[in-house]
Length: 604
Image (cartoon, rainbow, N blue to C red):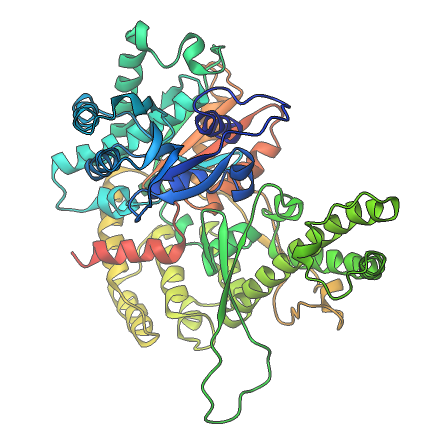
């Protein structure tokens, strides 16, 4: 997978670009890691602080922070080749901060910038200290085994808004496309495969495709320095089975990014602050009312990492929320049964009052302790994960209940699949209890995008009045109106398939009074599998006889993507034996962030 390849490349880099030695007991060489924000974003989803320490990284610092000289330690730099980064590296050389310098650039560095470093090293009399300079071609961020994004810093430069600005200059557009292509090129170098590129005509995706194609061809033509041949790959084998690379444009489907969702991971991204696999939740400080006139209690923010090591997360991130709530409840019950065991183990070890963190440090070898030591950290880790998901799921549930998200989800699914509606749209918009102003706007935009015939002027005025009364900002609608008028000339509206949601009986287990999750009034909706437009394009290409059969397909959305599409592709792949599908996007936004971009476009 991409994760393993990117992680292996990082580990090789942290080992001074030599392949890490297997099962040696020797101490690693202690060294520093100096990165910029780009490097930090690439490393953080893949390697934990503990793994870095195991590889001998004692300190990891940002390039542009005040760093003290540590003269007898080698430093590994992992930065983008930008002007200011290069200047700072030259300054480090002049100040003789470290014993030796290993410079790794996230994407390829230009000749002129290399010469700048060389002359600075000469001036500082430090030429022999710069041990190695490497282009790492790692300019993309992997979030899951089958998902990657291009960047997190400066993402507004390649956002949907940037690409679709009405007043954009050709030179700016070229710059944006070059940035995207540079990252995609890095992605394929790391993957070690030359793709077969497919894209629609006449939009940003086509520009990316043409530029990427040119860049790949130029690299393959230059046989001496090609990154796709022979041993330079690090893997040493060049697979002839080329992956199918499907480029899609966000404009093909604007409804999905605004859609209210019902699966765990996508819900977290929609209603909480979820960023590079880390979610931040505000903790409520107990439910007792504070005395009148007292200052409201300050809410603590807690962050949790949702990683591949978390079995519960791996299993349930794509499940509908009610299932997740039940599963968390089951885990809690099983854990409670084991809690006495934890108490017993703690007392064997004479650690009743100790902090959980301190216990995991112990490793005494007496027989009595060995069994306790091996099973206690395991149980404590289990408890940590259960607490994590209890908190996160409770936070999501609060949003579902207070904003009636189940109603929105069900109604939007009906709109998108053109089924009959049981309630008028106006009722939901003017119902003060249903959702925030933003929820209402999202619902209305989906209605507007998916409707065959746009509403008549009179109806539209009525809707607009209701939306304004609900406190909505109408600027996204201005943009969507233009967009719709434009796409109407250009193409047929996207088809969302007949999805449909069937409400099941009320939650059985979760309705129990002993449950953590009080689900009263929330519908238990179950999803039927249906393909979103992006998935449907992939499906058509996979089914085409003219395409060579490839086991790996990569779908990339120019202009931004979301977890709903990712989940839809994951579900699609489950039904296909022996196929792997990766999902990538230029940036990952949730509906609120996308609405912000639409309203900026609508204010033009």
